[in-house]
Length: 261
Ligand code: KIV
Ligand code: NA
Image (cartoon, rainbow, N blue to C red):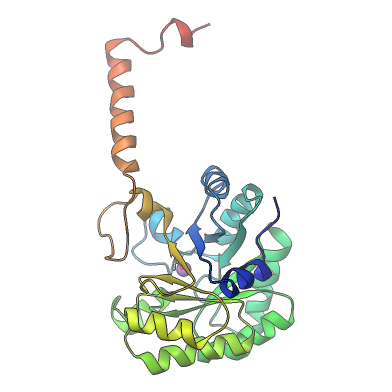
């Protein structure tokens, strides 16, 4: 099996095909998603919320991202693995972002970084790509901006959002992730750029789709955004299994002969 690369993704878009992307934070999950043929695995800073239990993505550190990136990079055989630059590594000096991107490429088996922002990040993206670090841009709703924005909201300003995507492409981004925008914006961005677009809550027109795996499989507690399709309920499976285990211990049926020496 050959590795999905920036080139593969561009070919997929050029041929009018689609791209699948999911988040992964650990070895076993990444191995399963890779076997399932998911094209891109994202070590998302969403791990602050779905793994660490924080309210926002802001608290996760670069060292923690690398810790998870290392596990996912070790598991993925076919998928390209993209790692989020956590807050504020994509907002401090450009040199700092280059150093973080270099750590991803040197210390993990991952292949690219994702960076929130569009037009205002053009110079940073260009410097990183020039340095040999593939960059996926992230426009539309930017979770790292939650406190400035005063919450999470659907983005509808088509001109600015298209300008962000175009600037990111011009700066050398190999793909543009588009989060939580109207169907019209998702389509306008995809028409305005030649690189693949990956949507999350961006309608059906983007080249590909991404979801947080925990949302997809129902391994979260509480609020679930409108754009999520929960295709399985791991929470119920896990709770029922743990209950069965507890009951088996209580009634003395575990361990049985088969599990004993
Ligand atoms: O961190 C994350 O999970 C993301 C999403 C857009 C998938 O960036
Ligand atoms: Na993210």
